[in-house]
Image 1 (tube, helix red, strand yellow):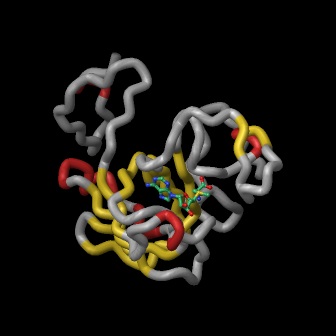
Image 2: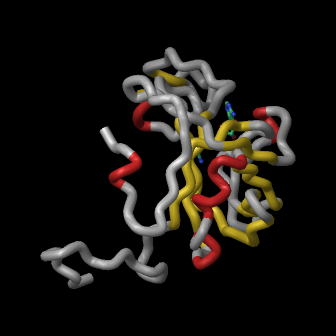
Length: 163
Ligand SMILES: C[S@@+](CC[C@H](N)C(=O)[O-])C[C@H]1O[C@@H](n2cnc3c(N)ncnc32)[C@H](O)[C@@H]1O
C-alpha cells in the first residue's frame, strides 16, 4: 500500500477513499454532441466534432505536461450498455459473433478507448476530436498516446534504450 512517504520530489497526492478490489473511480465526464446511441459514430474520427473532457477538480493537477502531446488516449465507461451478452449480432441479421471479437459497447466491463486529437486544454477541460461516446459518459483515464513520434519516458536504470 502506498503512503504519503512514497511520494517523489514534486509529486502530489490527494485524499481519497481507498478503492475496493478492482473498483474504478470516475475522474470526470465527457461532453459530446450525441444524446442517443444511434447518433454516435461507431468509432471516433480525428476530424470529428470537438468534444469536452471535463476532469473533476481534484485531478486538474494531473494534467501537467499533457499539453506536449498531440494525440492522447482516453478510457471511458460505456455506462448505458448491457453487460450480459457473450455472443452478439452487430448487424441484427441472425449471425452472431463472440463479444470479445467485437469492439461493441456491450461487454462485461464496458470500457471504451479512443485515441483522440488534443486540440487544447482549458483549465481542467480537454478539448479533443475523435470521440464516439454519449454525452455524459464517465471518464476513467487519460494517457499520452504511445507512438514513435511522441516523447519517450526516460529509461529506468539498467533498461535497454534501443528503440
Ligand atoms: C463501438 S463503441 C466503440 C468505443 C471505443 N472507441 C472502443 O473501441 O473501445 C461506440 C458505440 O458505443 C455506443 N456508446 C457510446 N457511448 C456509450 C455509453 N455511454 N453507454 C453505452 N453505449 C455507448 C454508441 O453506440 C457508439 O457508437
